[in-house]
Image (cartoon, rainbow, N blue to C red; front, side, top):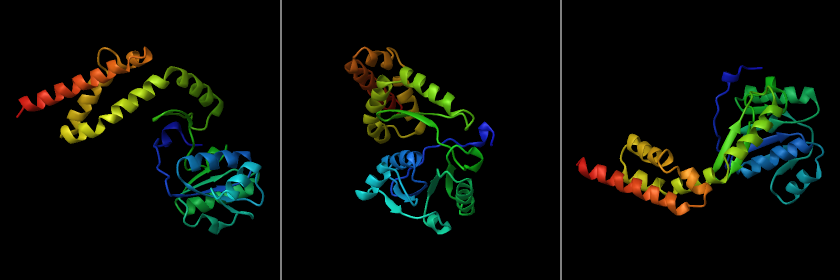
Length: 224
């Protein structure tokens, strides 16, 4: 298994990408649902499937190739997840994916993974990923619960409010440093925007944002 710092943590856009799931059990269903939620084009490879996967195939949400895995099934894929009960098949899927430089995850077998899936807590646009590099999924799940309690709806709402002024910032503040300083002034300002949102004072946060906009515009005007 790779060291913790062997993994490059990133978020991958899967919209329109072909994702292959090998294995039609409950884990395959879970993985297919999550891939679909990210906009991937999911192909299931399995002779049989749990009812949830059968339903997804029947409604046309996924393509189901109803047979055992074959090497050519990975042609045109971007990402591959294997969750069969056969070590031989899982190993072959990883080898075939590796030969094609595809992202591949064999569930619960870190040594047969070119990527691992962290535990994720989501709230609106906010997503926090927790990884133990495959060492302990149970610990990652505990951390997910605790982080979800600490960073919840107020943080997600603040992200939404800040996103509303991204267009203004890009159009008004010409440099990265100016845009960074603008947003940091709001996020780390006084009063604390998260505390305001926890108290139900969204107008107070909007006032903070408006004040920061005015100060940024004034600074730009005085520098001309």
